Image 1 (cartoon, rainbow, N blue to C red):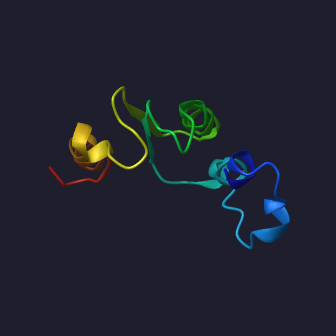
Image 2: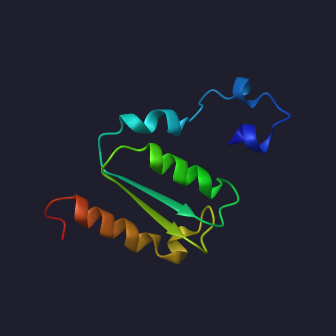
Length: 93
């Protein structure tokens, strides 16, 4: 994301941690919930969908049409997380 935001800087050389979720998500062996705000101005929504596509099953995608980058809980993300956990953790109902 830093390279996208600052294309004029050599950010890939400057950053110690790359946080390359796309190349690593295929190794996750737990249920995955990817959440995306369609009005996110930091991480474009298409990148969330791309990450979801690359994720192994079991996986779920939740999206808020009105949500941005850091306000998803204002649009129901808390209930989505709780619902996901209830369905994925045995005995948590």
